[in-house]
Amino acid sequence: MSKQTDDFFKNIISHAKEYGFVFPSSEIYDGLSAVYDYGQMGSELKNNLKTYWWKSMVQLNENIVGIDAAIFMHPTTWKASGHVDGFNDPMIDNKDSKKRYRADQLIEDKIDRYEKDGKTDKATRLQKDLDDAITADDLVRLKAIIEEHHIVCPISGTKNWTDVRQFNLMFATQMGAMAEEAEKVYLRPETAQGIFVNFLNVQKTGRMKIPFGIAQIGKAFRNEVIARQFIMRMREFEQMELQFFIRPGTEMEWYEKWKATRLKWHLALGADATKYRYHDHVKPAHYANAAVDIEYQFPFGFKEVEGIHSRTDFDLKQHQEYSKKKIQYFDPEINQNYVPYVVETSIGLDRLFLTVLANSLVEEDLSTEEKKDSRVVLKFHPAIAPVKAAVLPLTKKDGLPDKAREIMTKLKLDFNIQYDEKDAIGKRYRRQDAIGTPFCITVDYQTLEDNTVTIRHRDSMEQERVPAADLRNIIGELVSWNNLLEQLM
Ligand code: ATP
Image 1 (cartoon, helix red, strand yellow):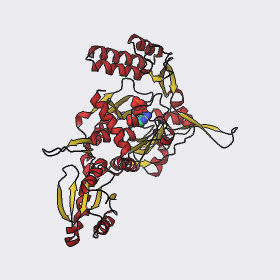
Image 2 (cartoon, protein in one colour):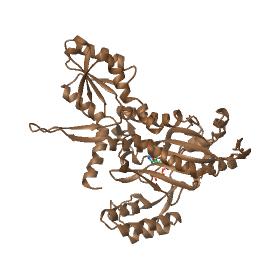
Image 3 (cartoon, helix red, strand yellow):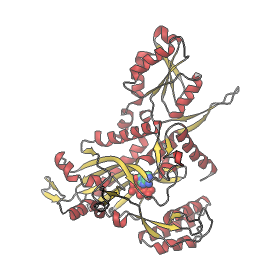
Image 4 (cartoon, helix red, strand yellow):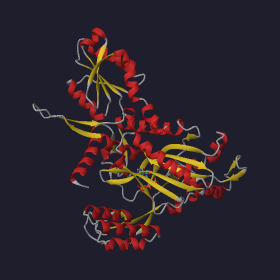
């Protein structure tokens, strides 16, 4: 990371904390590694991102329905899905610092370094070596690569490495009060399996016809070997997943369709298109025959935000085998029974949250010849802004607060509104800019006479005088979900 991007990333983290978006978990006890809490602004933003996803998936598509499955599942689920045996990351320890790393990530960091130093050929060759070792599951080769490229531990600075070993990422706990009866259960590492085991329930009760999808938003847990980069890689996080069930043989067509649809969804939020790219997987996971990531250019480089996987009939077939229950669909159009194929879109809500912060946070220089000035603004798309408008009485006296509250009372039926009467008006505008509020409504002496207010627009900072009675329409039009959803039609 260059100094500038490093500073920008630090700014994002400190802004998120200062304005109530994200706090380290149990901070009074010095936090818990890779676990975070969303504060008063963060949970609003997160809810809005969920709503955007849910509406675009479930509401806009008549053949997609949503469910909410439990975090705990029968332990055989994870045998069937392959997670008990195969959900591993290659880890390596440095014997001097006693720090643990993901072997592939150490190598990826080295590739980044070569690229930054202009050693493109070396970077390309190393990428190929890494891909080959990963494809072959060759842990010995991974260690050899680390040694050949003189990769040192960032803490100790030494090359005193252990061998590379596999590490299972699932958290386990016990279910049942008595130790003897207790059964080992896992905290789900992905939400997808809750959809697969409910395939027949939903298909039958919803009378769903293929092609159709089941969507779900929920928590997932992974004991990441190394957690870093703020809410990028957490041990408890949230996923928004769609499993789209299709006729075998049509998977590539749907895979391409979902690939395009999902990128469009990201871009609708207003990001610069050059910040996104596709990254094809060299070695798709054990269940997939094609996989691509949608990557976003974070301050620390392009990284995955969403994965799109053609999961074939792997999961349903596995559950059929392990549960000994037939999981099939009768397709009346071709008069055949089959196990459906699946195309999955899986996005991490927390990573999406980070892209939105990174995309929206700007520091603007407002200096004039007379004085230096600047402001920090979160330029969220208005539909996802945590607070839609702030109502601000110009002064704390002469009945202005009462008038302001009267206006707020009407607006709060439709929108999340803040009331603020503390400090000078300019300072209050800045506070709202910092949390991304699209509108500030100022109530002044003229309001008492003719019931008009000034409305200030966050991005242009322009102010106009409008009748208080028009506020609902003015705000409603700009913050409407339609502005986002229409772009997807
Ligand atoms: P990575 O390669 O970064 O570990 P992954 O390929 O294991 O990610 P998937 O299993 O495809 O990720 O999960 C789908 C999505 O869930 C990812 O695109 C990401 O947005 C999110 N996700 C996965 N792991 C984490 C995590 N530890 N913290 C936050 N989000 C995560």
